[in-house]
Length: 466
Image (cartoon, rainbow, N blue to C red):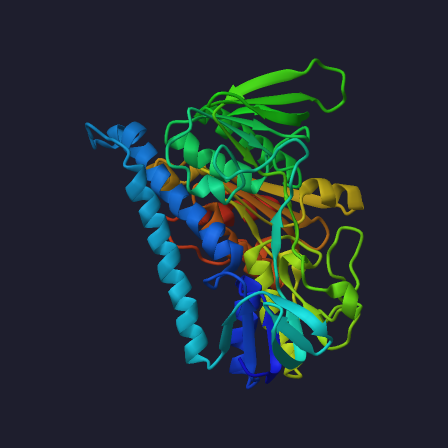
């Protein structure tokens, strides 16, 4: 490949990188995207968000057919699992969507180079250590990778990361999940629905520790009812392979309890993720990192090198695909001379278990510790007509507002459709709506979103249907 020059070069074709590439091209910049995978979409599309949701959806339908349809008058006999076909469906979804991004690159005249990018200088990128790309501006969007645990050697067969958990050839008899965060709970749910005994080992004293405490406790109880077992305040000290099985050694975090050995056939290590900076040669060009290995940037995503920028999981903030996308769009607009703004407090987060948990804004604990006077409005889905009709009446909506101004400070939902419902709340927070604004907005009946209206009513006045 002959040396080429661009307005913008992007290293990484995940949600942040490919969206930034599209927006840069739409704004008239000559753009190239360099991605080491054989397909675009990054971890999210290839081995993360999308394939896991395909399996979550399919496994939930399987579980419903086995356990829940009869109460609706639908009697199904002889339900069986064809795991190979389920995995093939997941792969087909990924294949179609990655092809879709390639189509968008062609449509927007974006050059796509498959290879590993590294810095030769502040304006030059080497692809696979040989071919050179020059660019006025360079965006680092290399994402993140799983954090390895001492004594837990991932082989993607018996001891797997989230990647290997998507391709297990058979349903484990006993799956041990290390880490009670979003990824561990979601993938644990998949295999539990398909027949696995699932034990989750969490270092903290509760699952998803950053979540609103009340909502987190509700999710904990729901997952326990479904059969998931938890060992909280517990650390894994090692995993030993025996003849066909695994022995997981764990102990209390405080060291005041006896150690325990758990026998299982598959271990899923989900102890968190870290920025992926390996091989970029950032030290060679003077790009500064913080104490956690993240690229440091200013309010305009600019690194310590003026023409080099960074977005997504590789910088501070929640490691979420949609956060990376918003940053990709904003950065493209900045490079085009515009003045966009991202309200990080209005970025939602979702745990795609069943029920789902969706949040936006601050938790009650965060608001309380800040000293702000606040009010809480809650409404249970057991009092929502559509939820009762759909047999999804577990959960509630919790809206937290400023006691003086009625501005919405945080919304937390636990429900089967929470991930979709949270969009209304994120929009409300983006435009600094009050609880009264939400409550006075007409909501269609019968919908589960009426629970949001009722929780808003409860926050500033009184709910109507409870």
